[in-house]
Image 1 (cartoon, helix red, strand yellow):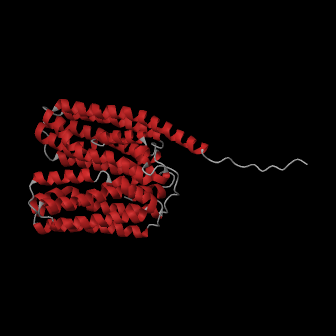
Image 2: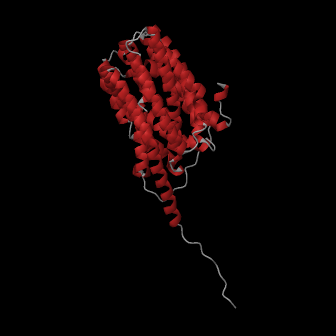
Image 3: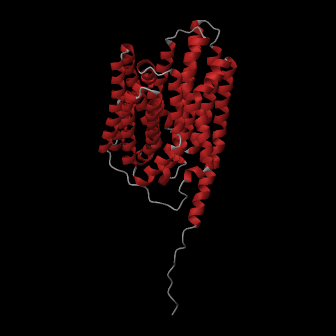
Length: 417
């Protein structure tokens, strides 16, 4: 943890706010679905449908709130999203039927997406010369916070009473509210000066939109560890079930220890493109190893799975570093929130569609599906450098166009005698 503490005061304030928030997130990620199915007794199908509706509802919110953060001040907008998320989460206690549940979870999920976009100008402003590296710090801190929240949630699930689950929801809401309160210590960030550009400039940037789609396809890899591999271990291998926790622990420890280091050499969009390419190859190799674990003895299956998770995590580190660099490096400073809100659409789509895709391909289809998914990651990684070069050409053309529109400088000359 001491190595995860940034140097400056504002960076530490943001890191503390992020840590507090992610402890609450860890509580809900681990036991939120169980609260609605086991404590509130909503049917699992209704819970899945409600979460899907919330995921799609939240997609467009980040763009609008990101633009609001650019024009009105990021700190206040970000703190407001945290407060709304805290209130919506507290309302889960009263959500004892389908539509109140949908309303509460849509509000909380939309506030979460909005907060990610509104926080981006703060990261860029207080991140120093390398805001992408500071974003890597925050991701490492995020994994620490979620791990602690998951441990607390494990105790609550073990108790299993309605009161225990309600304490989980209250603790989650308090964590979000405390995260907003910590932001009071953060100096406000003045909006960037307005420039002569289209109102929704990010939605007109076609290369950036292509990169958003490519990053979204690559972001399906986050669901490989949380959805596909656990189901594969139980249904297709002889590996012991406790290996599910072992794979998650291995991934979490490696991300905490290595995310900052993995991003230090990814210091330009071109380097980010190379990291995308390497991550795609790593995911292809990892998927191939997972597929080979079926039909082998338990010790061989466990060895193959742990090796696959190790390689997958290396690819995850490269993918995250690439996304941080490309999303910030190709976004104009005055529209950081709007651009990062657009970039978040890719991850949102992966969150909504990834589980169904992985279950259909890897679990229902079986071994061939793993090769198809791995090939999808590899092709996406190979396409990313082409999109980055396209985006850079557009960026350079835009700078040249702006320069050509500057009024000519008047030269004062005296008349000859």
